[in-house]
Image (cartoon, rainbow, N blue to C red; front, side, top):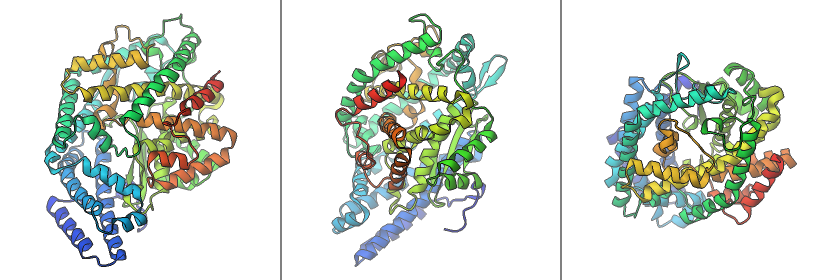
Length: 563
């Protein structure tokens, strides 16, 4: 690899259908002509290089669009990518099928690892050329949803806000301010209700149609394959959901009741707009702006060491961070990989709340893992499957706790307590999102109104304290429409619950022996995706969330600390 350029100077080769097909024909011929094991390995490595180039193109096109959703060139590039990508997937899957059936598969598995072959099996089962047009349509619908959310302009208190920049008012210490801001936000969603319902209706029917074409009873089965879940299934998740209802929801109810008392509210008076705030002072805020935060982060990572120091300097020197909220920028935060250059990129929307620190440390956990495993033997191992990816991100949120004074000063202990409280509360919410998606795709012909009632059913089961009063739209069961994963990447949510259970174990371990916990964390990052979720967790000294007793132990420790 040549000297690493700055982000603005990173380029990619735009593939074409004919060019890609010719390149794959040549790679197939090379593999077919290979007479020795070394030649077969070389052919697979050539294929891997082509996948790295393709992923860099995909990541940069998606990233540029997220940075400016109204840029015509970026949107045109996204549309071209969305139209071409299923055809490229077809070519990739054909190569995977060839390797799965290869006469020398045993030796190739021994060299590259069995995990890659398990992942390729899932990919082969989740794709066929017949669904190429459906995948193009799905990508266009997802882009429409992303663009719609980025276009939000919310009038409030004499000003106009995006979904990202209104957040400080949603967590105001003044109850009436946050109530009014909450109503303003949901009024925008209500104004777009017909479009939001229509986009999701189209997505559900389209995804169910793809599952039917591939021979599956419903999209749940296909969704699990698309998420490459190779060592647990929907029955395992169903049992975990039952444990969450039995063990976590009652604890969450207690935490909410204490929150209600801390806010000075009478029993039963807590409303949905109160939930983000945990004491009358309001939530702690970072003590400086974006540039000040970057300076504090640099200090933090220098003191943490373990490779995070040099890595963060690399990210800064090559402009691999886009953290400021702005108009036309997509909401949310994410990390993406640029494998041609061997680096990640972190995207976020700082808005002056404590969430800036949480999102930043979360996405830096993803980025550090991607960098640590950049030299893995196959692109399939640069990142693990999503639930494993979230271990690195959620764990770094906790592993940075000793440095929170840098960001919050005297409010650092308040931040830590709220962060732990919200981490436990999230287990219930994240499970509700997952259960909701199962219901939706098990009954794909439901109407939008019936789906809203499904969400209300989930709130009664997992979030029984929630009360929206008469807030527009959301009081009718539409809260889920702000959760971008549901539209963009179905079934990507129980992953956060599984990872949070693992991250809480890392937090507990770090409280006992920080250096040992950090060594285990870095070793896990270096493994990338070379093993499945449960194998990676156990290899890092963690108990799988699916193992009996795991949830009880995690809850007991959190309960002790939270009193």
